[in-house]
Image 1: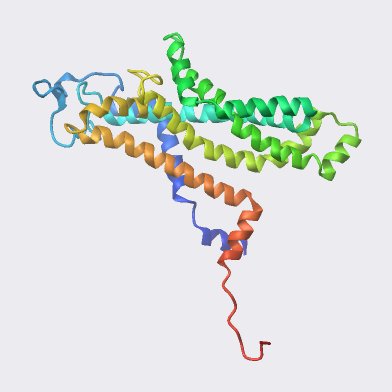
Image 2: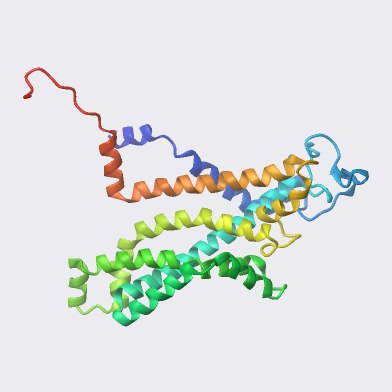
Length: 310
């Protein structure tokens, strides 16, 4: 029976397969660079037409056997390798910021839910302040004043997490307030467990499903945040590639070489869409109420038979 169910479901959702392939390509970026013989920072002046302002030679942006997706206008750098390294940076920032957001949000949310009235009030008002802040303006200002030699990926991770933990904290606080009235939490307290032990042994396992679901929703938002900041020039800076930084450089080349714009934009769109679909699937899978509601909606009403009461 279980085998039949697994076969009926298929090998897995296409978004998960596509994301796994993208992560694998990002991790294998140095290996791909060595195999193709292309350096993401190597200029190739002979592959662009200087008389036309640096437009790639050849059709479709200079696609060839050596340059699978063509070359970058103006510099002649290999576009495929830069896209792969760009995926590496974009995913690193998104995953790092999400992990830090979740850690901050879970810790402060549990502290607010388990703490006394003063602690709850202070932390709740603090999260309200961070939710009300004009995040983009503060992030731009903060990243602009940081010294240029500070690692930009680490800076983006810290900044995005610093201004993004409040949503997770509010969800965890609400769940904690509900769970601390449960019998198993009361039994643990009567058994002499302190707040840290109650949080670690009793609350965290019950909070895993909503936190994982919310983290899956945060990931695409953080990918867009990194791309937006890099596009505005306060995120990843050249020559380090990221999709947002490549889009920022490509805006002036749209008429001359549309592929230079469409490739990073298309990858960014498909990645965000795949993470969004996967997050929705996780929400349904981890929330029994949602799964039962969908299951009830799929059931067809039984046809009336002879002899059934009116």
